[in-house]
Each structure stands twice: as C-alpha cells, then as structure tokens.
Amino acid sequence: MSLDPRPLEAIDAALADAEAAGWVTVRLDLAGVRGKAALMRRCGDALRVAGWFGGNWDALADALIDLSWLPAGAEAPDAPEVPYAPGRLVAVTGWRGFARARAGEWETFTEVLESAVEFWRDGGGAPLVVLLGDAGPSGGTVRGGE
Image 1: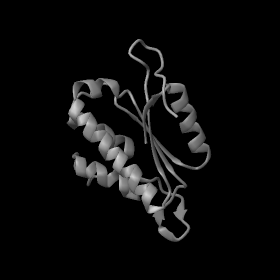
Image 2: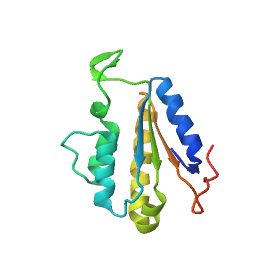
Image 3: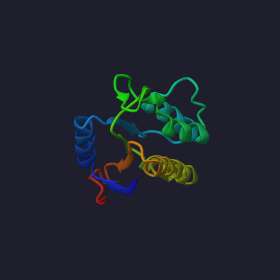
Image 4: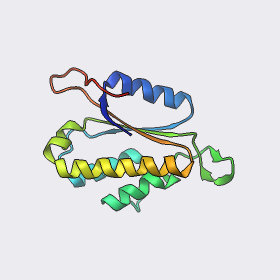
C-alpha cells in the first residue's frame, strides 16, 4: 500500500492499466465523509459487499480478505467456485477531509488497508494494491508516491 498520495492523473492511469490487465478495480471516493458510519457505508458501497457487511472495522477487514465481493465471471484456475481476478486495485480518493476530521479513525482505516495488503502479499494469492490519490489543498495535485 502506498500511503504517499499520488496525483489524480496517476490514479486514473493506474486504474485504467489495472482494468486492461483484467484486475478488479475499485474507486473509493471519500469526499464529504466525516465520520466512521459514513466511511463504512462508502466502503460497503464501493466494494459491493453483501448484506453481511457489519459496518465496523472487523467487517471491513473481512471484506478485504473475502473474495465474494469480486464480480462474477472469472473463475480461479484451481478453484472454479471462487471468483477470480489476477489482482485487485483499490484507489482511495477524496480522503483528506476525513483524515483531518477523524485522525484516529483515519489511522485505524489505513491500518486495516495495510493489513489486507499484507494478507494477500503473504498468502501468495492475487495481490491487493491500495493507492491514495487526491487533489492537493490548493486544488492542485499531490506530489509523492513511488
């Protein structure tokens, strides 16, 4: 996971490249989110999780390690009953307002994301990549990233 914000143009390019490679892509736009309940609703909607999504940190962590939210169509080569993609990219945008308003919850959110990225990296399955992107405070783009 890159906690270094990237320009929105780089996020758009990463999403397009990932889609072209057959990855599942999710844009998680947090613009206007100022509390945990709104964050959880936005995450549930963006990830297209089922009704079991409990709207708490544990449920979010579960959603990021459970493949059931993947779109149907592709099948895992070694497990045809499991939806498959060669990778997953979650692009988080519009996050600055939430990070400023709820610094502690932002820290927990990023820890959940980092844990999910580590889970997929260590488990040897298709990767989960999370990128942060946003316009800077003056309306420009944020510099940084790898």
